[in-house]
Amino acid sequence: MDIRNKVVIVTGGASGIGRSLAQRCAAAGARGVVVADIQQEAAQQVADGLPAGAGLALRCDVRQEAEIQALVAATREHFGQVDAYLSNAGILGKAGGIELDDELWNAMWQVHGMAHVWAARAVVPEMVARGEGFFLVTASAAGLLSIVETAPYAVTKHAAVAFAEWLRIAYGRRGLGVACLCPQSVQTAMVASTGGDSSAAHDGVLPPEQVADDVLQAMHDGRFLVLPHPEVLQYFRAKGQDYERWLGGMQKLHARHTATG
Image 1 (cartoon, rainbow, N blue to C red):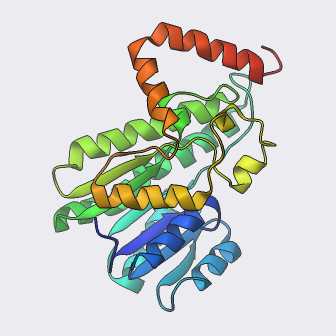
Image 2 (cartoon, rainbow, N blue to C red; image 1 turned 60 degrees about the horizontal axis):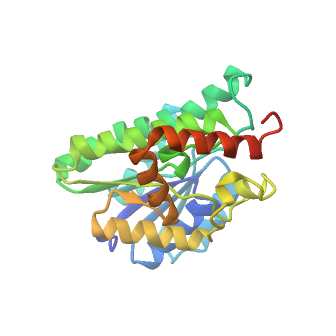
């Protein structure tokens, strides 16, 4: 998709990758960029920094389908339609696994799983009817591989990748462009909260602007998998070639990065 003169919604748009996506879309000529975030004031600051008339800040808690529906309705009312939906909001949660409570697991499912489903339900039918549209799922390298520190993040990011795949399979020949963003560590406040010692930082921490540029290039090229860290493709192929060996390597990584080993 050519982003010029298009209307784009970016969830999680107040900071990190989302902020850079909003800024890059506006710079590339988008007619309207909706900065959606649970942090209204921060979203407004991002929208205010976009070209005059292009930015609109809207509060949205993606854990609630009704709020996603309201976000899409407000965007249509203001700009006329939704051409691209960048489903980018995410949360990190806590380190741990089966001992973590259901409240955390459910929050992860809502943000990393159902938020994408609800968004697609709200925008994809109209895009398919027009014969053009774009939907981004921000997943993670953890969704292709894993992340040893936190089970809820790894599991729900796998779900995000699977849903993006399904959208591409079901609608990719009906005018819908679908991409799945799977970076490792990116310079965001969420990553900074880990203290920089996450296993995801092994291959370097990228600036969010670079990640956003990769997304726009994938959007232009019609490419599904967006891998800002090229090493991820190597690891993904190695996983497929020898799954048992890959699992053994991940067990060693788990021992290095967790207190229990």
